Length: 339
Image (cartoon, rainbow, N blue to C red):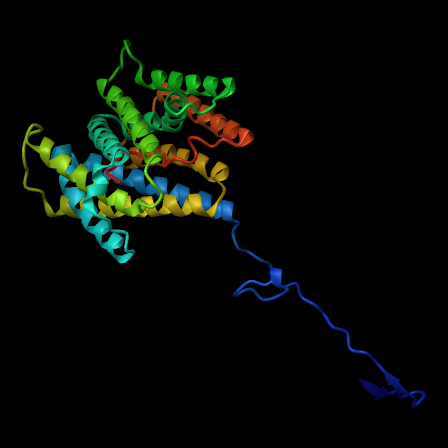
């Protein structure tokens, strides 16, 4: 490039300067020089996990509300029919359908049995317990999975995590309060439900990766629906549902699917060690909805026990991260809702 100066009349040559922009700093929809407001993968994963827990908790609140009109066996049946239709449509769309003989695999059968037992016991507990109490007991599930993996698969667990497991179950005992005034036998149902869920998650680890998880979910939804039909008569039989109850159960089934998809995306988006602790946000959602919908106020014993469970669980996750042996964090950690 050349130009003539006004003072001397001399011709001066200027070389153009090339500005190089790092292509790694350019993202679609973001102009160079503008601040990048995109969320980090860990933050997105944490928000998805919190959304999943909210979906599952709202589903539990709906189940508790609808139990005034029908028994929980009928709830399992009606909600399961909606959930099965939604999951079957999604599985067909994603070409995840497989032959039904997959159900005969030992690991799949054990997973389904764990889900059925966990669902029945949890629903029985939710109907009679404050929502926050049942949810707090379920928060010991990751610790139960770590314990089960150590006893069943020989997973190495150090003394610090053993102490965390022991502390978590002490927190459960504080909530359950066996042998003292205020004891509720349905708290034991929630605790046994945790055992069934641990069996479910440990069995899931033995299912071949070639079988789509969505198809396993479909098999689980179908079998839980059938289980609801089986226990319907012993629990009092069929009650004609109102239009409001049907709409709520259809919404609950949709929430189960939303929660399931959110938790999968959360675990695929962020680091497990960063995302998994946000499972405990379910306790906050349960306290909120329990207060707003049912007027439940957590007492001091429940808050104390829940705090011990959450802190021990967080410490166990921390130790898994330090030792690079994520046992509980890699499992679903989902409540037993037929999915």
